[in-house]
Image (cartoon, rainbow, N blue to C red; front, side, top):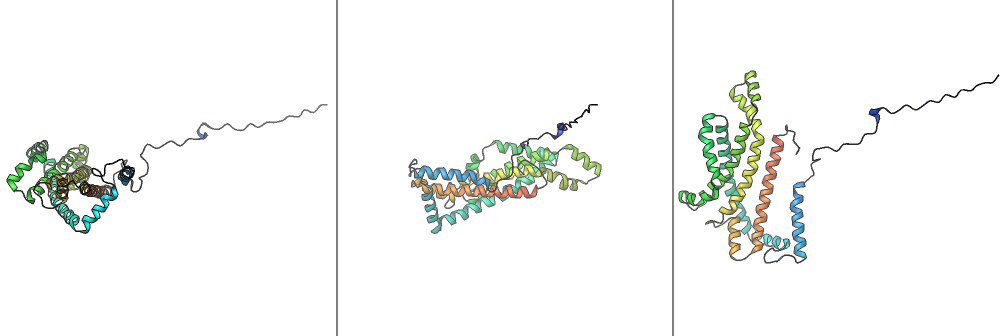
Length: 282
């Protein structure tokens, strides 16, 4: 009798479809926030400026080297000229910004929360927006004189318009379903404004605030060249008469630093106040 040997072969189980190796899909968000990322652009411009100056590609009489501008700035600061002009410019910009901020918020609330207020205010503000603000300078000189008052008034107008427009648009853009929900919950008007309207309008308000901060510096550099005896704009205007391009660049650099710092402060406050909001930037 012949013995038959049977060999049993066990096959490896096939991989389940869901067990196949997966490739990591790239996220659609911009990625993690880089520390001091906003300084990369200015530093790159500074590096290119220094490289071009060192290579002799720039005319020193027209665009002095960064180290020349730095040396001039240190000299102006040491003799007290730059410090006094900075203090004067900050005071003008601060007064004008405070008045413009208050006017923009008050007018936006009055127009955005009331049909009567909108009828009286919005059309006037839109007309004011259509008129170039710097074109009002001759009229304001006749009304307020050539001194400090008209400068502060012009800065206030430059500031309040973007704050009003963006805050009013944010108030008008609040979803009507929130109104219906507040009515169902029986909220009073004051509580509805405090808990629904104001938080919903804050993103638009901060957009207008950033534009207003920038506008205050843009208006200041023009206004300080009109019958002024101090300020960064006056310093730059006097340097133009004597062909001192390094002094002009010192003033521009200081204006740029003021603009960058003030915008960064507003951004920081915005992130803290709107920490509940999830956006691409966060």
